[in-house]
Length: 500
Image (cartoon, rainbow, N blue to C red):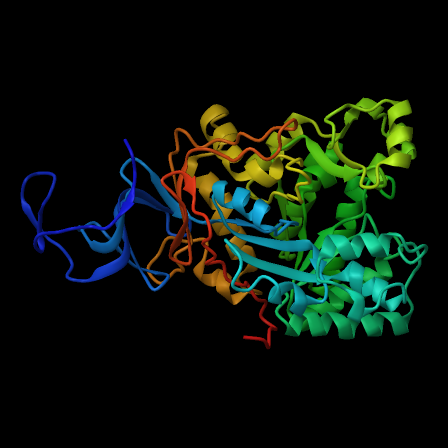
Protein backbone atom coordinates (compact mmCIF):
# COMPACT_ATOMS: atom_id res chain seq x y z
CA UNK A 1 0.00 0.00 0.00
CA UNK A 2 1.35 3.45 -0.83
CA UNK A 3 1.25 6.13 1.82
CA UNK A 4 1.10 9.67 0.55
CA UNK A 5 1.05 13.22 1.76
CA UNK A 6 -1.85 14.88 -0.07
CA UNK A 7 -4.55 17.48 0.18
CA UNK A 8 -7.71 16.11 1.80
CA UNK A 9 -11.04 16.78 0.10
CA UNK A 10 -14.18 16.27 2.16
CA UNK A 11 -17.60 16.93 0.74
CA UNK A 12 -19.14 17.66 4.12
CA UNK A 13 -18.55 17.39 7.83
CA UNK A 14 -19.87 13.83 8.05
CA UNK A 15 -17.88 10.68 7.29
CA UNK A 16 -18.86 7.06 7.50
CA UNK A 17 -17.11 5.07 10.23
CA UNK A 18 -15.85 1.54 9.73
CA UNK A 19 -19.20 0.15 10.82
CA UNK A 20 -21.17 2.26 8.36
CA UNK A 21 -22.48 4.67 11.00
CA UNK A 22 -22.08 8.41 10.57
CA UNK A 23 -19.36 10.01 12.71
CA UNK A 24 -19.18 13.74 13.35
CA UNK A 25 -15.74 15.18 12.47
CA UNK A 26 -14.06 18.20 13.98
CA UNK A 27 -14.78 21.49 12.21
CA UNK A 28 -11.14 22.54 12.61
CA UNK A 29 -8.79 22.02 9.68
CA UNK A 30 -5.24 21.28 10.81
CA UNK A 31 -2.08 22.00 8.85
CA UNK A 32 -1.43 18.26 8.92
CA UNK A 33 -3.65 15.33 9.83
CA UNK A 34 -1.95 11.98 10.51
CA UNK A 35 -4.71 9.42 10.17
CA UNK A 36 -5.18 5.89 11.49
CA UNK A 37 -1.62 5.34 12.72
CA UNK A 38 -0.50 3.30 15.71
CA UNK A 39 0.36 6.19 18.03
CA UNK A 40 3.02 5.32 20.61
CA UNK A 41 3.83 7.72 23.44
CA UNK A 42 6.52 6.36 25.79
CA UNK A 43 5.73 8.78 28.62
CA UNK A 44 2.04 7.95 29.02
CA UNK A 45 2.15 4.45 27.56
CA UNK A 46 -0.43 5.25 24.89
CA UNK A 47 -0.31 2.57 22.21
CA UNK A 48 -3.44 2.75 20.09
CA UNK A 49 -4.81 3.77 16.71
CA UNK A 50 -5.37 7.51 16.77
CA UNK A 51 -5.58 10.54 14.50
CA UNK A 52 -3.04 13.30 15.16
CA UNK A 53 -3.69 16.95 14.29
CA UNK A 54 -0.73 19.31 13.81
CA UNK A 55 -1.10 23.10 13.73
CA UNK A 56 1.72 25.67 13.59
CA UNK A 57 4.34 23.03 14.27
CA UNK A 58 2.62 21.66 17.36
CA UNK A 59 0.57 18.56 18.09
CA UNK A 60 -2.80 20.01 19.09
CA UNK A 61 -5.12 17.02 18.77
CA UNK A 62 -4.90 13.27 19.37
CA UNK A 63 -8.28 11.79 18.65
CA UNK A 64 -10.19 8.63 17.87
CA UNK A 65 -12.53 10.72 15.73
CA UNK A 66 -11.81 11.64 12.10
CA UNK A 67 -10.09 15.00 11.66
CA UNK A 68 -9.43 17.28 8.69
CA UNK A 69 -6.11 18.56 7.46
CA UNK A 70 -4.76 20.75 4.68
CA UNK A 71 -2.32 17.88 4.26
CA UNK A 72 -2.99 14.30 5.24
CA UNK A 73 -0.82 11.29 5.93
CA UNK A 74 -2.55 7.92 5.76
CA UNK A 75 -0.58 6.11 8.48
CA UNK A 76 -2.69 2.93 8.59
CA UNK A 77 -0.40 0.05 9.50
CA UNK A 78 2.42 2.39 10.54
CA UNK A 79 3.84 3.44 13.91
CA UNK A 80 3.53 7.13 14.77
CA UNK A 81 6.36 7.78 17.24
CA UNK A 82 8.15 10.77 18.71
CA UNK A 83 11.03 11.91 16.51
CA UNK A 84 14.28 10.18 17.41
CA UNK A 85 16.80 12.26 19.39
CA UNK A 86 20.54 11.70 18.94
CA UNK A 87 22.50 13.16 21.86
CA UNK A 88 25.82 12.18 20.30
CA UNK A 89 26.16 13.43 16.72
CA UNK A 90 29.45 14.97 15.62
CA UNK A 91 28.78 16.02 12.05
CA UNK A 92 26.10 18.51 11.07
CA UNK A 93 26.64 18.79 7.34
CA UNK A 94 23.74 18.59 4.92
CA UNK A 95 24.94 15.16 3.78
CA UNK A 96 24.94 13.71 7.29
CA UNK A 97 21.69 15.37 8.33
CA UNK A 98 20.06 13.77 5.31
CA UNK A 99 21.19 10.34 6.55
CA UNK A 100 20.03 11.20 10.07
CA UNK A 101 16.58 12.15 8.81
CA UNK A 102 16.31 8.94 6.81
CA UNK A 103 17.16 7.10 10.04
CA UNK A 104 14.23 8.80 11.80
CA UNK A 105 16.27 11.43 13.66
CA UNK A 106 14.61 14.82 14.19
CA UNK A 107 17.17 16.29 16.62
CA UNK A 108 20.95 15.75 16.58
CA UNK A 109 23.21 17.25 19.22
CA UNK A 110 26.98 17.56 19.54
CA UNK A 111 27.31 17.06 23.28
CA UNK A 112 30.41 14.91 23.79
CA UNK A 113 33.14 17.00 22.16
CA UNK A 114 31.19 20.24 22.22
CA UNK A 115 31.87 23.40 20.22
CA UNK A 116 33.49 26.81 20.61
CA UNK A 117 32.77 29.61 19.89
CA UNK A 118 29.19 28.60 20.55
CA UNK A 119 27.63 31.63 18.87
CA UNK A 120 29.47 30.92 15.61
CA UNK A 121 28.41 27.27 15.64
CA UNK A 122 24.72 27.98 16.22
CA UNK A 123 24.69 31.04 13.99
CA UNK A 124 26.03 29.16 10.97
CA UNK A 125 23.15 26.66 11.16
CA UNK A 126 20.06 28.73 11.96
CA UNK A 127 17.66 28.66 9.01
CA UNK A 128 19.70 26.10 7.10
CA UNK A 129 19.25 22.79 8.92
CA UNK A 130 17.06 19.85 7.96
CA UNK A 131 16.75 18.70 11.59
CA UNK A 132 17.06 20.31 15.01
CA UNK A 133 20.56 20.90 16.34
CA UNK A 134 22.36 21.80 19.54
CA UNK A 135 25.73 21.57 21.25
CA UNK A 136 27.68 21.78 24.48
CA UNK A 137 30.70 23.98 25.19
CA UNK A 138 33.95 22.24 24.28
CA UNK A 139 36.15 21.78 27.35
CA UNK A 140 38.99 20.78 25.00
CA UNK A 141 38.94 23.91 22.84
CA UNK A 142 38.49 26.17 25.85
CA UNK A 143 41.46 24.40 27.45
CA UNK A 144 43.56 25.00 24.32
CA UNK A 145 42.76 28.72 24.55
CA UNK A 146 43.80 28.78 28.21
CA UNK A 147 47.14 27.21 27.28
CA UNK A 148 47.65 29.82 24.56
CA UNK A 149 47.82 27.36 21.64
CA UNK A 150 44.56 28.66 20.15
CA UNK A 151 43.05 32.13 19.97
CA UNK A 152 39.32 32.55 20.34
CA UNK A 153 39.11 34.96 17.40
CA UNK A 154 40.80 32.42 15.12
CA UNK A 155 38.40 29.55 15.88
CA UNK A 156 36.00 28.80 13.04
CA UNK A 157 33.17 27.12 14.95
CA UNK A 158 33.84 23.95 12.92
CA UNK A 159 34.81 21.68 15.82
CA UNK A 160 36.63 19.00 13.89
CA UNK A 161 38.68 21.56 11.97
CA UNK A 162 39.54 23.53 15.12
CA UNK A 163 40.35 20.36 17.07
CA UNK A 164 42.70 19.22 14.32
CA UNK A 165 44.59 22.51 14.54
CA UNK A 166 44.77 22.26 18.34
CA UNK A 167 45.92 18.63 18.19
CA UNK A 168 49.00 19.66 16.21
CA UNK A 169 50.16 21.84 19.10
CA UNK A 170 52.44 20.01 21.49
CA UNK A 171 52.09 19.57 25.23
CA UNK A 172 48.87 21.25 26.29
CA UNK A 173 46.83 18.03 26.24
CA UNK A 174 49.10 16.39 28.82
CA UNK A 175 49.75 19.34 31.11
CA UNK A 176 47.75 20.09 34.26
CA UNK A 177 45.95 23.42 34.47
CA UNK A 178 46.75 26.14 36.94
CA UNK A 179 44.15 27.93 39.03
CA UNK A 180 44.48 30.94 36.73
CA UNK A 181 43.87 28.83 33.65
CA UNK A 182 40.79 27.25 35.19
CA UNK A 183 39.42 30.69 36.02
CA UNK A 184 39.92 31.68 32.37
CA UNK A 185 38.18 28.50 31.26
CA UNK A 186 35.29 29.20 33.65
CA UNK A 187 34.75 32.56 31.96
CA UNK A 188 34.88 31.08 28.47
CA UNK A 189 32.50 28.23 29.36
CA UNK A 190 30.12 30.71 30.97
CA UNK A 191 30.21 32.73 27.76
CA UNK A 192 29.35 29.63 25.74
CA UNK A 193 26.44 28.83 28.02
CA UNK A 194 25.09 32.35 27.56
CA UNK A 195 25.10 31.79 23.81
CA UNK A 196 22.94 28.71 24.20
CA UNK A 197 25.16 25.69 24.83
CA UNK A 198 23.31 22.82 26.51
CA UNK A 199 26.15 21.95 28.90
CA UNK A 200 29.88 21.15 28.87
CA UNK A 201 31.47 18.38 26.76
CA UNK A 202 34.74 16.59 27.57
CA UNK A 203 36.86 14.14 25.58
CA UNK A 204 39.32 12.99 28.23
CA UNK A 205 40.95 10.47 25.89
CA UNK A 206 42.54 13.47 24.16
CA UNK A 207 43.23 15.63 27.22
CA UNK A 208 44.79 13.28 29.79
CA UNK A 209 46.29 16.29 31.56
CA UNK A 210 42.78 17.14 32.76
CA UNK A 211 43.32 15.26 36.01
CA UNK A 212 40.72 14.42 38.63
CA UNK A 213 41.32 17.72 40.41
CA UNK A 214 40.58 19.65 37.23
CA UNK A 215 37.46 17.60 36.56
CA UNK A 216 36.16 18.15 40.10
CA UNK A 217 36.61 21.88 39.53
CA UNK A 218 34.43 21.84 36.41
CA UNK A 219 31.88 19.48 37.93
CA UNK A 220 31.51 21.94 40.82
CA UNK A 221 31.24 24.78 38.30
CA UNK A 222 28.54 22.94 36.34
CA UNK A 223 26.58 22.06 39.48
CA UNK A 224 26.58 25.72 40.49
CA UNK A 225 25.47 26.75 36.99
CA UNK A 226 22.89 23.93 36.89
CA UNK A 227 24.15 22.58 33.57
CA UNK A 228 25.07 18.98 32.65
CA UNK A 229 28.37 17.38 31.67
CA UNK A 230 28.83 14.99 28.74
CA UNK A 231 31.98 12.98 29.28
CA UNK A 232 34.10 10.63 27.23
CA UNK A 233 35.89 9.31 30.25
CA UNK A 234 39.51 8.22 30.33
CA UNK A 235 40.20 5.46 27.85
CA UNK A 236 42.25 2.33 27.54
CA UNK A 237 45.88 3.26 27.38
CA UNK A 238 45.21 5.58 30.34
CA UNK A 239 43.03 3.62 32.79
CA UNK A 240 40.80 0.56 32.68
CA UNK A 241 37.18 1.16 31.67
CA UNK A 242 35.94 0.53 35.20
CA UNK A 243 38.45 2.98 36.66
CA UNK A 244 37.23 5.63 34.22
CA UNK A 245 33.63 5.00 35.24
CA UNK A 246 34.49 5.15 38.92
CA UNK A 247 35.91 8.63 38.38
CA UNK A 248 32.56 9.66 36.90
CA UNK A 249 30.66 8.34 39.91
CA UNK A 250 33.11 9.95 42.33
CA UNK A 251 32.84 13.32 40.61
CA UNK A 252 29.05 13.30 40.50
CA UNK A 253 28.77 12.13 44.12
CA UNK A 254 31.21 14.73 45.50
CA UNK A 255 29.87 17.72 43.58
CA UNK A 256 26.22 16.98 42.81
CA UNK A 257 26.96 17.43 39.10
CA UNK A 258 24.81 15.88 36.38
CA UNK A 259 27.06 13.66 34.26
CA UNK A 260 26.24 11.71 31.12
CA UNK A 261 28.89 9.11 30.27
CA UNK A 262 28.93 8.64 26.51
CA UNK A 263 28.90 5.31 24.60
CA UNK A 264 29.11 2.79 27.40
CA UNK A 265 29.90 0.08 24.85
CA UNK A 266 33.15 1.54 23.51
CA UNK A 267 34.08 3.07 26.87
CA UNK A 268 33.21 -0.07 28.81
CA UNK A 269 34.65 -2.65 26.39
CA UNK A 270 35.28 -5.94 28.22
CA UNK A 271 34.05 -4.34 31.47
CA UNK A 272 30.74 -3.14 30.03
CA UNK A 273 28.69 -5.21 32.48
CA UNK A 274 30.59 -3.87 35.49
CA UNK A 275 30.35 -0.28 34.24
CA UNK A 276 26.59 -0.59 33.74
CA UNK A 277 26.21 -2.04 37.24
CA UNK A 278 28.25 0.83 38.67
CA UNK A 279 26.20 3.50 36.89
CA UNK A 280 22.90 1.85 37.73
CA UNK A 281 23.95 1.58 41.36
CA UNK A 282 24.80 5.27 41.34
CA UNK A 283 21.37 6.13 39.98
CA UNK A 284 19.74 4.08 42.73
CA UNK A 285 21.70 6.10 45.30
CA UNK A 286 20.41 9.34 43.79
CA UNK A 287 23.53 10.27 41.83
CA UNK A 288 22.68 12.13 38.63
CA UNK A 289 24.46 9.91 36.08
CA UNK A 290 23.33 8.39 32.80
CA UNK A 291 24.72 6.69 29.73
CA UNK A 292 24.04 5.68 26.12
CA UNK A 293 25.07 3.01 23.61
CA UNK A 294 25.48 2.60 19.87
CA UNK A 295 24.74 -0.85 18.39
CA UNK A 296 28.00 -1.64 16.58
CA UNK A 297 31.09 -3.65 17.52
CA UNK A 298 33.46 -1.28 15.69
CA UNK A 299 34.55 2.04 17.17
CA UNK A 300 35.53 5.07 15.10
CA UNK A 301 39.12 6.06 15.72
CA UNK A 302 42.21 7.15 13.84
CA UNK A 303 45.79 6.06 13.68
CA UNK A 304 46.72 8.73 16.23
CA UNK A 305 44.05 7.75 18.80
CA UNK A 306 45.19 6.20 22.10
CA UNK A 307 43.05 3.14 21.31
CA UNK A 308 45.08 2.55 18.13
CA UNK A 309 48.57 2.97 19.57
CA UNK A 310 50.97 0.05 19.35
CA UNK A 311 51.21 0.06 23.15
CA UNK A 312 47.45 -0.29 23.53
CA UNK A 313 47.23 -3.01 20.91
CA UNK A 314 49.91 -5.00 22.72
CA UNK A 315 48.55 -4.37 26.21
CA UNK A 316 45.04 -5.51 25.40
CA UNK A 317 46.02 -8.30 23.01
CA UNK A 318 44.50 -6.61 19.98
CA UNK A 319 45.74 -7.36 16.49
CA UNK A 320 46.55 -4.97 13.66
CA UNK A 321 43.79 -6.72 11.70
CA UNK A 322 41.29 -5.37 14.25
CA UNK A 323 41.91 -1.99 12.62
CA UNK A 324 40.12 -1.23 9.34
CA UNK A 325 41.09 1.80 7.26
CA UNK A 326 37.98 3.79 6.33
CA UNK A 327 39.34 5.14 3.04
CA UNK A 328 40.08 1.72 1.53
CA UNK A 329 38.18 -0.73 3.74
CA UNK A 330 41.32 -2.84 4.23
CA UNK A 331 42.28 -4.56 7.49
CA UNK A 332 45.76 -3.48 8.55
CA UNK A 333 48.97 -5.38 9.10
CA UNK A 334 51.97 -4.09 11.05
CA UNK A 335 53.53 -3.03 7.75
CA UNK A 336 50.48 -1.17 6.44
CA UNK A 337 49.84 0.31 9.91
CA UNK A 338 53.29 1.91 9.84
CA UNK A 339 52.86 3.06 6.26
CA UNK A 340 49.45 4.71 6.72
CA UNK A 341 50.43 6.30 10.00
CA UNK A 342 53.11 8.15 8.08
CA UNK A 343 51.28 8.80 4.81
CA UNK A 344 47.53 9.08 5.61
CA UNK A 345 46.88 12.52 7.08
CA UNK A 346 43.52 11.62 8.60
CA UNK A 347 44.19 7.96 9.33
CA UNK A 348 40.48 7.32 9.89
CA UNK A 349 39.83 3.84 11.27
CA UNK A 350 37.11 1.51 12.38
CA UNK A 351 38.52 -0.35 15.37
CA UNK A 352 36.83 -3.74 15.77
CA UNK A 353 37.43 -3.95 19.51
CA UNK A 354 34.02 -4.79 20.99
CA UNK A 355 32.20 -8.08 21.47
CA UNK A 356 28.61 -8.52 20.33
CA UNK A 357 27.47 -9.88 23.71
CA UNK A 358 28.52 -6.63 25.38
CA UNK A 359 26.71 -4.56 22.75
CA UNK A 360 23.57 -6.64 23.31
CA UNK A 361 23.88 -6.27 27.07
CA UNK A 362 24.21 -2.50 26.82
CA UNK A 363 21.40 -1.97 24.30
CA UNK A 364 18.99 -4.11 26.32
CA UNK A 365 19.91 -2.56 29.68
CA UNK A 366 17.15 -0.36 31.15
CA UNK A 367 19.38 2.66 31.90
CA UNK A 368 20.75 3.16 28.37
CA UNK A 369 19.43 5.51 25.73
CA UNK A 370 20.63 5.31 22.13
CA UNK A 371 23.20 7.70 20.63
CA UNK A 372 25.04 7.22 17.35
CA UNK A 373 28.44 8.87 17.90
CA UNK A 374 28.20 9.42 14.16
CA UNK A 375 30.89 11.49 12.49
CA UNK A 376 31.59 13.04 9.12
CA UNK A 377 31.64 11.18 5.83
CA UNK A 378 34.59 11.76 3.50
CA UNK A 379 33.79 11.02 -0.14
CA UNK A 380 30.76 9.11 1.09
CA UNK A 381 32.85 6.88 3.36
CA UNK A 382 32.49 6.63 7.12
CA UNK A 383 31.21 4.60 10.03
CA UNK A 384 27.72 3.12 9.43
CA UNK A 385 26.48 4.32 12.81
CA UNK A 386 25.99 7.81 11.34
CA UNK A 387 23.39 6.40 8.96
CA UNK A 388 21.86 3.36 10.61
CA UNK A 389 22.01 3.45 14.42
CA UNK A 390 18.34 4.01 15.17
CA UNK A 391 16.81 1.73 12.57
CA UNK A 392 19.29 -0.97 13.60
CA UNK A 393 17.79 -0.98 17.10
CA UNK A 394 14.36 -1.86 15.70
CA UNK A 395 15.66 -4.44 13.24
CA UNK A 396 18.10 -6.23 15.50
CA UNK A 397 16.57 -5.98 18.97
CA UNK A 398 12.82 -5.67 18.38
CA UNK A 399 12.32 -7.94 15.36
CA UNK A 400 15.24 -10.35 15.26
CA UNK A 401 16.37 -10.87 18.87
CA UNK A 402 12.98 -9.86 20.35
CA UNK A 403 14.76 -8.63 23.47
CA UNK A 404 13.22 -5.16 23.38
CA UNK A 405 9.54 -4.44 23.04
CA UNK A 406 8.57 -1.96 20.37
CA UNK A 407 7.62 0.54 23.08
CA UNK A 408 10.94 0.09 24.89
CA UNK A 409 12.83 0.74 21.67
CA UNK A 410 10.76 3.86 20.94
CA UNK A 411 11.45 5.01 24.49
CA UNK A 412 15.21 4.55 24.18
CA UNK A 413 15.47 6.55 20.94
CA UNK A 414 13.12 9.41 21.83
CA UNK A 415 11.73 9.87 25.32
CA UNK A 416 14.82 8.88 27.32
CA UNK A 417 17.10 11.42 25.59
CA UNK A 418 14.43 14.12 25.88
CA UNK A 419 13.87 13.33 29.55
CA UNK A 420 17.60 13.40 30.27
CA UNK A 421 17.94 16.84 28.72
CA UNK A 422 14.68 18.56 29.62
CA UNK A 423 15.91 20.11 32.89
CA UNK A 424 18.80 21.70 30.99
CA UNK A 425 17.30 22.36 27.53
CA UNK A 426 13.73 23.71 27.82
CA UNK A 427 12.80 22.71 24.24
CA UNK A 428 13.19 19.06 25.20
CA UNK A 429 10.23 19.24 27.58
CA UNK A 430 8.01 19.25 24.48
CA UNK A 431 9.91 16.66 22.46
CA UNK A 432 10.24 12.89 22.74
CA UNK A 433 6.48 12.59 23.19
CA UNK A 434 3.32 12.24 21.12
CA UNK A 435 1.00 14.37 23.23
CA UNK A 436 -1.18 17.42 22.78
CA UNK A 437 1.06 20.44 23.31
CA UNK A 438 4.22 18.65 22.17
CA UNK A 439 6.33 19.96 19.29
CA UNK A 440 5.47 18.10 16.08
CA UNK A 441 8.74 16.19 15.73
CA UNK A 442 7.35 12.85 14.57
CA UNK A 443 8.78 9.71 12.99
CA UNK A 444 6.37 7.39 11.18
CA UNK A 445 7.68 3.94 10.27
CA UNK A 446 6.75 0.43 9.30
CA UNK A 447 7.67 -1.73 12.30
CA UNK A 448 8.01 -4.80 10.06
CA UNK A 449 10.38 -3.12 7.60
CA UNK A 450 12.44 -0.51 9.46
CA UNK A 451 16.09 -1.53 9.10
CA UNK A 452 19.58 -0.18 8.76
CA UNK A 453 21.34 -0.76 5.44
CA UNK A 454 24.69 0.94 6.11
CA UNK A 455 27.63 -1.43 6.57
CA UNK A 456 31.30 -1.13 7.48
CA UNK A 457 32.03 -1.48 3.76
CA UNK A 458 29.42 1.10 2.71
CA UNK A 459 28.66 3.34 5.66
CA UNK A 460 26.41 5.88 3.93
CA UNK A 461 23.51 3.70 2.81
CA UNK A 462 20.24 5.21 4.13
CA UNK A 463 17.93 3.21 6.33
CA UNK A 464 14.66 1.81 5.02
CA UNK A 465 11.13 1.44 6.35
CA UNK A 466 10.78 5.03 7.57
CA UNK A 467 7.81 6.54 5.75
CA UNK A 468 7.68 10.08 7.14
CA UNK A 469 9.84 12.27 9.32
CA UNK A 470 8.20 15.47 10.53
CA UNK A 471 10.38 18.25 11.99
CA UNK A 472 8.55 21.15 13.65
CA UNK A 473 5.45 20.21 11.68
CA UNK A 474 7.14 19.94 8.27
CA UNK A 475 7.99 16.74 6.41
CA UNK A 476 11.68 16.17 5.63
CA UNK A 477 11.02 12.55 4.65
CA UNK A 478 7.77 11.89 2.78
CA UNK A 479 6.51 8.62 1.32
CA UNK A 480 9.88 6.99 2.15
CA UNK A 481 11.83 9.65 0.24
CA UNK A 482 14.00 12.51 1.48
CA UNK A 483 12.49 15.92 0.71
CA UNK A 484 15.07 18.15 -0.95
CA UNK A 485 15.57 21.76 0.07
CA UNK A 486 13.44 21.74 3.23
CA UNK A 487 15.14 23.25 6.29
CA UNK A 488 12.74 23.36 9.27
CA UNK A 489 15.35 22.46 11.92
CA UNK A 490 15.49 24.70 14.98
CA UNK A 491 18.28 25.34 17.52
CA UNK A 492 18.07 23.51 20.84
CA UNK A 493 19.39 25.91 23.47
CA UNK A 494 20.44 25.30 27.05
CA UNK A 495 18.77 26.82 30.08
CA UNK A 496 21.44 29.53 30.53
CA UNK A 497 20.90 30.96 27.06
CA UNK A 498 20.57 34.72 26.85
CA UNK A 499 20.34 34.62 23.04
CA UNK A 500 16.85 34.20 21.53
